[in-house]
Length: 185
Image (cartoon, rainbow, N blue to C red):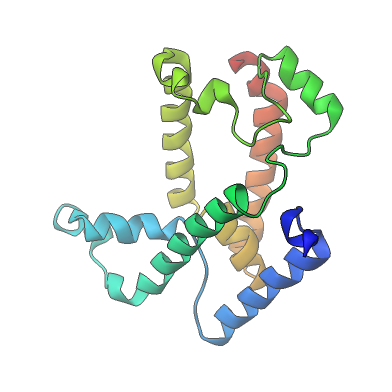
């Protein structure tokens, strides 16, 4: 029973993800979190403003349940089913992040420098979150899906566009962390 309070190893979580993907393929559904943003915009009336949001959202409502489940599961995993909320990061990475000004590296999943209430008073933190959010939102829409949709769902369906998108995500992440990140922080 103690295992449920520890991070699950790859040989437990990986097959569980594969099982879910198999079940989705079996019933003719494809998984993707960012597509829910389109559904939620349509629910808020965006279909009256732009044709992109004019679609039958009822066919995609099952995916909204996935979002609710992810939020509830994440909350339970972090607050109920976890002995230690600290994230396991390589000590060398923690040292580098500390040098860059992230004092909570290795202690929390979200750095206080960006995700605390104090960060909302920092213009630089707000600018980083806004610009980052816009770029991620645009990129996910432009690529036809986010990292989870392409990497988990698209690759399991053997889709070439997903392989290209995942390669781009990976290269973009490397460029961000090794080239841009030191300039920003």
